[in-house]
Image (cartoon, rainbow, N blue to C red; front, side, top):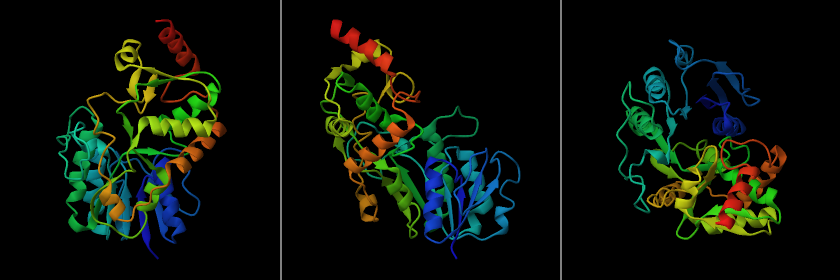
Length: 323
C-alpha cells in the first residue's frame, strides 16, 4: 500500500489532497497543529513545526510520497533535512508569487524569481516560497514543485473569488461596483483540479498550475448570470477607488481580482506545462456554480476576509454616482 505523508492535511487545500490520496487507496498520515480534524480514514499526528524533534516519529518510517504546502521556508528546509532521505517522492506546493516579473505576459516556469528569503528577513510570501523551493530542489529528480495561481472553489477561506458570487447574489436588481474592466484578465485554478493533480502518479520538475486566461469582464459576466443579477454594473477607475480607500486584490475593503494596471502578467501566465502533464481544468461555469452554491450556504451577507460589505459598497456607489 502506498504510504503518503501530508505536512498539513487539515486545511482547505491540504485536506482535499489527503482525501484524494485516501480515495486512491493510500495509507495517509497528516502532521498538523491546532484543533481542526483530519479527513476520515487518515491518521492525524499533532505537531508544531517550530518544535524540536517534530519529525522524529515520521523519520522512523519510509514514505512513498510527502506533500508540503508550507509558506515558511524554515519549515520546509527542516522537513527536507529530516525526511528527504525517507521518501521516494516529494511534492511542494509553491505559488505564482515566486515570480518577480508581473508585467510580462505569458511567462512560463523559466520566469525570473524573487530573491530567496534569508533567515532573519522580514516575512515576504513570495521570497519565502522561493527559498522553500530551493530546499526542495535539493532532492533533484525526486521532487515536484507546483506553482498554483489563484486557487478558487467552495469553502475558500480567502473569500476572494467568492466575493463576486456574493456581491451579485445580494444585489439582486441593484447596482454592483466593479473596477474598470477593459484590458483586465483573470486566471484561476479550481481547488479540486489542483488537489487531483497533486495526488496522482508521480511527476517531476516545476509546473505552473493555473487555468486559462479569461477577460475579467467575461468572468464577472458568468458569475453575474449564475447569480441572476439584473442590476447595473458601475465601473470605477483605479484612481477613484484608491482615493476612496478601496484595496487591490484581497483583504478588508477591497475589490478582489482587481490588480494594478502595471501587473498585467500576474494573471496571464503560461499553463501549457500543466496541461501537458495531464492537469484537469474544470469549466469556469462549473466552478462558478459550485462557488455560488457555497456562498449561499455560508451566507452571502456574512463577514468575510476580502471584499466590501454591502453597506460599504452602497456608500461608495452613492459617492460615485453623485460625483
